[in-house]
Length: 195
Length: 354
Image (cartoon, rainbow over all chains, first blue to last red; front, side, top):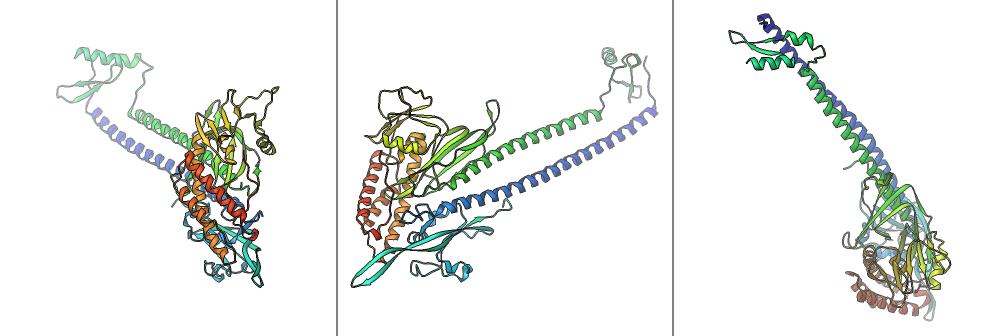
């Protein structure tokens, strides 16, 4: 035997349908909320992780620059004729000035060599830039400068040597290595955003 | 209809009934309602919650997996980067050979090396990536490649272990071109090595190099200087070549170490890179000649330098090309040695000949 429901039941059912729809809407809103919450948390976590990564990247890049710079004076491109360690051959260094091939070879964003002690306290714009024409009467050899927007400079003292000739007169003379304190200044590009 | 009704009755779900005025009505079968007390009504809310919860759970697990994975890739990339940073400080200068400290990792690590002489011209490049052991024999996902442009690392294609044994020697052709950094992870057993070679290697005090005699046993890569043994690597000092993986690797001076310890691909590629560096250095010396001429220093090597730069610019590894470069380098060396002591273009320590 079956029970036939009356019109009140239909009204109640309609009411229930409206309630269910509301619940679906609530659920949908909650889902969107939960999703947005997780997305926000994810973004914050990523931000923290990646800001740490950039810091690590910059520290590693600086370490790399420093390590490479210390070893640079002993590299074949700069090493002195005499078997001195930490000594730069100025006559070789000046020829590196126009060699753009080396920009990507060393891990520096800029590389300069201050050729004499007297120039140590000067700003770059006060120093006399070395060219083939005025060498060795100049202060700084800019091997290259990529023009990086943010840069950390590291420096290292070196012996800066070049060939000199002493004239004794009567067509007599001798060539010798003239050395003084110089400085290598290498730049590391500083990055603080992925762009 | 009756059949359908019975089926519904058994199932415990609501049964749609059509009344006389054709409106849909519902009836719950009383029998089932009272008998099946364990019945559970799966409402929309439940279904929706399970589906949404499952989806969120799946997303969370997926994101966690990705995060862990990217974490291990980052750690491996940092490992490789640190490794490259350590290499940057290794410049032997004019020293005959340098033994930097052994490189130790906390866990078993695989280091992958690749080399390319034709990209990033004119110097080419090498890349290294790392992967550390997670558990058992499983290794984490390989980190990103870290590029090395100013170093020449001679090694097998893949090294594995906790401790790696490096040493570095200069490469002269005829002036110093670069340092050869040799990396190894296994024991090498040298049989019948020439005295000079043995002395030079023993000076470096490497823990993975052995010179066994008739009474000692050595387990590792067998390197033989005389034929007649089962050898992994054979060296012919007369022909100036090393036979490895059925390939003949020609060498000169300290390149003998590079040929023994590295894979043929990395050896050939790095020799090509070295020749490209020699090409650039030749131009630097040509410019230097012009500078020191102002100081009454004359050098006769300019033509020979042009000659060597012409053949090293697009060098590809082959015996005739390599021997031709050695010949010109020897000529440059002879001219430079005869120059005024104050006007020598370069000075080398004694060149090793094996």
